[in-house]
Image 1 (cartoon, rainbow, N blue to C red):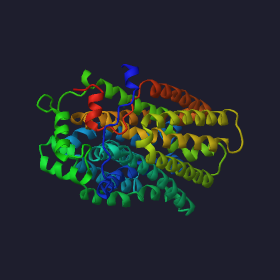
Image 2 (image 1 turned 90 degrees about the vertical axis):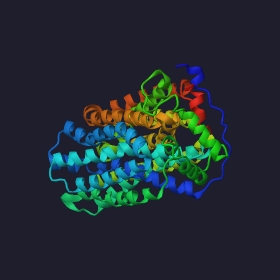
Image 3 (image 1 turned 60 degrees about the vertical axis):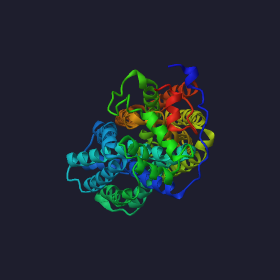
Image 4 (image 1 turned 120 degrees about the vertical axis):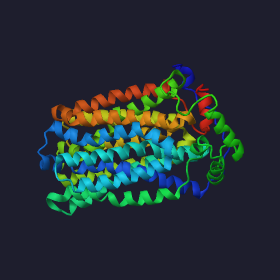
Length: 460
């Protein structure tokens, strides 16, 4: 890949369309899939010790239990693209809402370890699917001028879901419900899952999916309500049709080919670096990490809430400025923050430093994630693929993200049990690699229509 060309910014060519509440409402509903994604991801952090005791789990089996949802997530992410192309983004999101309900209630009423694994696996399918379809759908209904902020609402909701999970775990833990406390932690997620399923039917189909299906009048109606990049709905539809060029390309054409090598490599790198930071190891094991450093149970749960709140604040800040500041600048600042926070955490464990060094280091790390990779990943991956393969491209980026997540989350308890500092040191080294990649390779995509990004990447 030509690093000099790729690292240049694409010129912003989009007019500033009028903002409308309809677009925001549709975005918020679709982004509820992200909230459930975040809640499901983080809720297990408060149940780790209870699960270990309930099912007599070794370090290895505990890691597998946490990773069981991620196996479903990997399959859900790689398998979500094709159904979203066939049945539409909205139908795919509604299906995930049903799976979320069944999974949360199933985990709450699990009768043995195997049944628990099965229901966590089901929840993983929904998380993986939501990580693909929610940002994909929002990117396709949003004008370029607002697209970064709109797609970043998904990540904001992911972080909000994480904070809700931590806060819910803290409240349930403070109620001292006894042996079944962990069941309540999983079961409460059924309520927002039902709300998500009901609200998704109030949103329209993606206009780009409608154009692919030849339903031009419906697409025209959606673009009129959500806004267009060109200011002319008819011109917008012609650009979408041209980008698909289905007279020369089939929507079912091979995805892994030379034509799409640039966006494929960009998506794989973005997804891999996201997890090589160790972010999900920290999120899944936050209370355990603090207890390893000497904190009590309730103190560890409370510190988890602080971690979640910090990420929420910095994600909100990134959401506000992402379309003005750009994706690359957020990634550069986030990469530097990652390195500082991870080196500090590694030193805190290595030198057995008493006090607040670990908390401060993890807060810097979490803030860097919320401001950088966390805010950018789903925006960037949803932008870089052509319309005709966007669902499959989003699925590939999400698959890479979750496959790396499973590997990191499974191995973290084993590595941390031997020497906690080594895990954080390895993650810090990987983030040096991310910083180099951002500076040398990553393109800027702010303010450019999806169809123009395709042209700028040299995809015919």
